[in-house]
Amino acid sequence: MGVWGIVLGVLLAIVAVAIIIVIILQEGNQQGIGAVTGVADSYFSKNKARSIDAFLSRWTKFFAAVFVVFVLALNILSKYNVI
Image 1 (cartoon, helix red, strand yellow):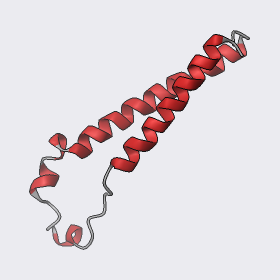
Image 2 (spheres, helix red, strand yellow; image 1 turned 30 degrees about the vertical axis):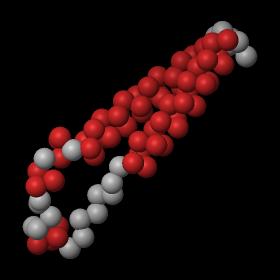
Image 3 (tube, helix red, strand yellow; image 1 turned 180 degrees about the horizontal axis):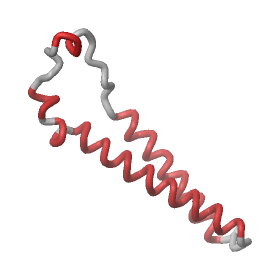
Image 4 (cartoon, one colour; image 1 turned 180 degrees about the vertical axis):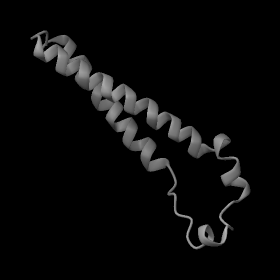
């Protein structure tokens, strides 16, 4: 395995750990019986775009995209025997 394979492998592992951490930090989406009666709409749910959950959701999408790019790069490089 070449230098590029090691570098991409380490970066892939770091991104995988980051995805796990960001997902674990997110709150659950359980609304209970309040969703049936309409009481589930609160101040925090209306301002979700500014909340920490929205922030973590954006980072989850970012890390997932980076993860896919690294996996594709590793596969392409291994197909052409670069790594």
